Image (cartoon, rainbow, N blue to C red; front, side, top):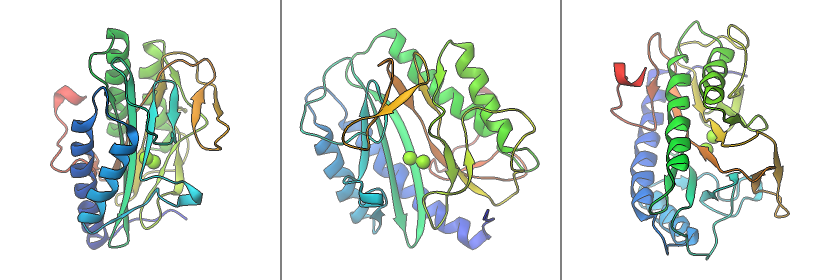
Length: 257
Ligand code: MG
Ligand code: MG
């Protein structure tokens, strides 16, 4: 079932997105050498509950944390732990919350201290992939247009697009239809309609796109142990550029094309 949201429902998703944006902004500032992902996780839960919301990841199919903390070759779903972060690493933080019954889901990748030029570029290109894909997310286009745009940009830099994990519809549930792959063919897949709400989340590896699940049953790593970057927002489809619900006030400009 693919839903379209009423203006009143979108207003609630805007509130959830705004809170998540504020929480992630504060988490970003914590990331530096010596800090542990467990400290970041605890702060995330504190901030979400302070905002009157519930962490959506904690307890989701048994996931034990508020954030997914995935450094370096971990793609997504990494467990927070008490190991201090080390200069030169990159850390992906994925987080979601439920405010008054409505979900928001967003992720970013951030340097730990000073990082190599190659890693800086991977983070930048992954964010570009999101924006390039998001611009295709408009009424009348299809899901395949989003994935095609993301894949084309990532592969033009020689990167691998993770295929085992996808973006998704989002609303009162974190994962709803349709699935939003980061690869695809233009003009294929579900047709987008105004009011649909989806999470677009490119996961881009410096090497190949193959992945495996660690023994903990959650942590996903690249097969070749190349580093991976993740960037995600919850968006609403309109007739023009999408509204970025988890990035309040954001407006597309020529620079983001
Ligand atoms: Mg997420
Ligand atoms: Mg997601």
